[in-house]
Amino acid sequence: MSHDHSSPPESTQDLLLRLPYFGGVPLPVLQQVAQRARRLRVRRDAVIVRRGEPCEGVHLVIEGRVKLCCESASGLERVMRIVGAGDSFGEALAVLGRPYVVSAEALSDADLLYVPGSVLLDQMAASAALARQLVHSLAQHYYMLMGDVSAYTVHTGHQRLIGYLLREAQAQRGTAFRLATSKGVVASRLNLTPQHFSRILHDLVERELIAVQGRDITILDEPGLRAYQNLQSS
View: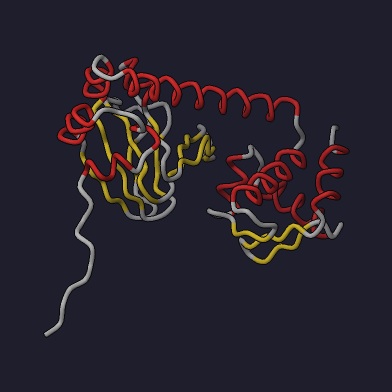
């Protein structure tokens, strides 16, 4: 006789507990949120929300990656942010009752939880921990936005791309890593055209600072890469 040793599916409450968002939140509050949360499983390239649609809740990413993007009048896509597991989007708009200013599309198969904004706001009154997490999330997103504006204003394309590669190496804990998404998406996220992105990569390869094989990147000379980044001030 065969036996099925597969694990039972996680409950919504268990999924919430995996998210930093709900760290320290009392169990009764967690249960109230779980009762109203809706689980979403989406395939790669699926549109989760569209720019202009009403935002009435928060999306929490359990697994996968989502890009927040908008399109210019000429049809050029601009990636504003890439959201990964443990992150979220929609808080500010849900609180303000404003429509989405960007679209959200899945970069991979993804597992998300959607929590109505009214539920979060109601439960904040019962949990200081949840209120702190919401404020922390909003502050973090604001900080990232200001960092992006600063980078686009004062940093060259070389500096932005080198900074991104160094951060990815640190996040993936090694000098050899794989880009989590396509080069085109990374270029858009860094406010670079695909052509400019490719020229910078080629320059770094020619200088033997990195090696590139498709989406696989190896940093060959980290001190040299940091020194070259500092030289790119104009």
